[in-house]
Image (cartoon, rainbow, N blue to C red; front, side, top):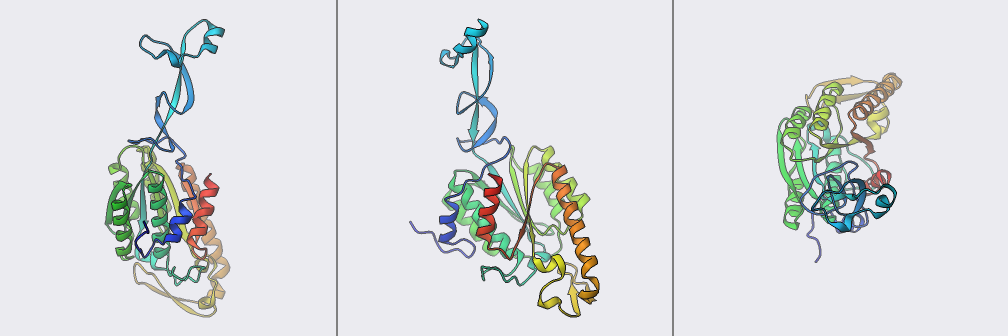
Length: 304
């Protein structure tokens, strides 16, 4: 059956995502059999360890080789595999409106558009492999909070929510990540898609909270080449910058600031990477002048 037409998910995306496999890097909990390691032990899939035989254990799990060496009875324990519960968190603060990107896909005009395409592809990929995908959209408040599921009806609802999301207001990302950390069930994966214009120490506290609650984290940091080094035609002469969240304006000559600005940006990116690394959170920078589907294929290949 052909897919309905969605603004942020095309039939070609379905074909590309169907060839990929997204796996958790740590143990997860779930309700059905899937691709990912469970924190629980059972008698299925992949050998984990031995334990001493007790009355009532099934004899077929006895390890006779160990018995021949030790003259004691041990049973084999195996890792269970389970499904993954994922919440895709999109930063919808006004700074995500930046910029008028000229990438390989003319449909991408801003970071928020890029984030929506990534979220749609990831949700489809997760559902395709019988995992559960949820959605949260955060600016000053949590605009959307869709619990993880994997049915076609749920995916349709998630895609329609993405179409309705707009980037507005100031960021409350850090505050609401703390709230999500408390509300998310079991050992979940949180995929954060953001430009990360937040205070690094506060971001660190929010990520530590996720880890304390035994959630996994994956940060997709959206960047535009122009903001990395004040490059591009628009920065070829004096220009007035406007903060998309506060409205504050500042007139600059890019030529006078470029070298110092580039150093500060690199210092900031280094700080963000260290924050994620210290919190045991996966971090990936993504340039939005690269087609989103190529960036996603490369990301998943790198994780594998």
